[in-house]
Image 1 (tube, one colour):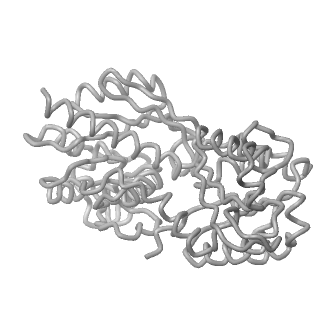
Image 2 (spheres, helix red, strand yellow):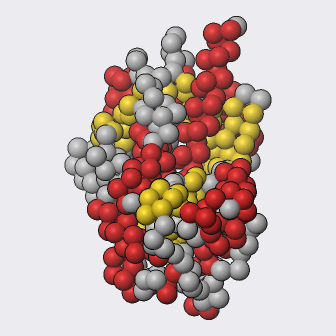
Length: 405
């Protein structure tokens, strides 16, 4: 089961004899459907060539921070935002020390300092270097900074001695990488998620719709699956591959989406309404194509059902989360929607040219009763994992209050 499908992993390779394992790691990650980009430290290039890792990853390998062409577009910031996970394997003792004190004078350390995504480290060094108090203090600091430490293994080393410090072999390392994405936060929970736009027909060839791509809803579905949830994804017309292990139901109109939602909502624990549902539809649909034989045309519109409000008003409503896409007064409109529709949480973002719809990244404001958090601009996969973590916390808080109230 390829639970790493479509993940984006930035692989950092540092100066260690274990760098040869990085070649196999890249190959196996790609076999699992991962998009891998590679950054090498100057010392790493003495152990394995960038050309080798470029051929295996299918992308150019970055080695220099002061690369005039790449950095003209702030390439290290772009890479820091691009990745779902930064994996440093092998991570030398020198690399651990640099990261622990916040150095940023080479490309890899600058990326690590500039990212908000998860960073995992697979240490590789002589057993005496590993057990040195300075190295152990660096590991303590990195754990404090929420770096994930994967390994090391114990066994025979390149120097001929035996002890802890070997980089994990690729199969167990790959298993730990998979586990990083499987949080278990929503184990046993059932989620219904709506995503994408709806289309409301004017005639057989024309319709009313919007710019929603469905990317945020699909990212949330994948993150929820990785958190252990059973996911039903109800989506309007999109050009996205359905997440593995999600039950995907395709609809076109708002009425079809409402029907599908209410068919699956009764035993649902969490409802997330990311879909951009058309507020209105044509009151009547022409049976034949309307000819353009007049200078103007009037289309009478009627209100579509409010799917989100209908779920929130159920006698046994699930934990209900809405989205608010606004062009102005974002927080005010979101707060009003949260209150008026009796939601547990609302996720708000500004839309417009280059913002929100059809973008790979976004920034969000998340609001709940007496609570508000801002999530800075990052890719939608990263946002989805943070939202699932936050939803899990708020669901637990609500259930705790209910059980003790």
